[in-house]
Image (cartoon, rainbow, N blue to C red):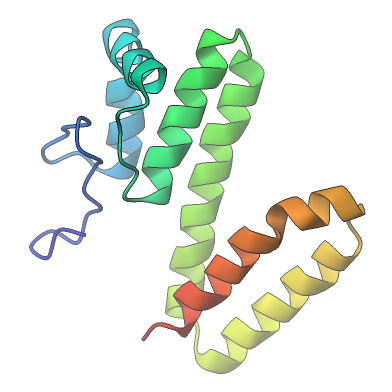
Length: 132
């Protein structure tokens, strides 16, 4: 995180001076910059420093695979995740606990395979909320 602006910095090879996370997506989802992301994916030479960067690389992979609908879903999911983190940051500890309990109740209703896939992100969410 940039201490001066509070913005997440992109991974090496993803320069985006002054771009917000939304700006990062808009910038890199052009034809020229998608080609750059595809090159990074092909080489395996990239470092992910923030969840948004991982989401951006996933979206690029999906676009190349012809899965533009799934790419839009991945981009939307990244946006929803940031909104959830922002919401929790504004809540006091009791409200955070209520939200996390609600999420756990919904997750318990999911098929086992889906629940297993989201277990780690939910653990990470709890860790993020626990940090003052």
